[in-house]
Length: 413
Image (cartoon, rainbow, N blue to C red):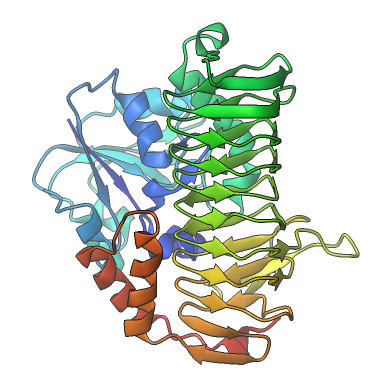
């Protein structure tokens, strides 16, 4: 079976700025990305299936070409798999589709449907007008707003744990390098090569998953549910509250709460990060702090790329930061700040609440980040972790530089 996770254009916009540089399927929540969850769930039905991703044309080179001529199971990439949905999707027959009570199309099976046409204005319901409709009546879990990544993270950590381990007792591993205190009834998993030294792990509220080759330095305090991805480093005295997911090869210090870091990013020093989402290859300078609640405890509004205005985001929201963005030492980020791709932020004053992609500056002085300089600096940051900017990544950043033209002056809250 050929399985394709596909992005809806409007939902991609709602997940700005993280969706500027990746498919929705590549967003990390819980232990896994959304694509990894679906691969895991569908393996028992289609053990030899070939998984692909269909996204915006400028991002498609990241995932390779798709054969639209094959019999294919198509699944909307913003859906989080649960038992009822997985069973229903797996039982789809040729030229059948699943809709929700809202008439939203969740999945379908067929061939000859070029979904890239929806990025040119085609309506998906018209492309599937000859399909037989089945209504999904159970509860639906999905990512429709960027803040869903941290508000639903606790649930997804626990679900992914159940996917990975048959029982809780099987999942507890304490190797020779786990020289720390563990409190609470939920389990701790430590992968091969990980070291947790003279630290405290509290699992009263949820499990703690520590992947391979992780170093948790002495004096750290971790309160589950927490995920620490492969190769990450937790520096001395760090305080990590659940529900937090730290992606692979991140470096973390200071205080982090209820946040998701996609991977390869640094918050290496003191400072607070809460109720936030940070993309890949980002850096938060020493003593960078993000506010996650207003002084009057009132509702927070964040920038929406769909409506080009600020929209409600609940009572707690810190910073949403796109890939390759960085802020200098002592940066103060206001409640509900949204930072685009490849921004360089510095200065002691609060920056605007929306900083469009390729912005350079601080306080009231902002310039356009020159493309050649942005590409050079992105590659330099990647080389610090023994990676380099690929040809495809250069193409994507070049495309975004040409198409992301928002003026920072017009979006100050």
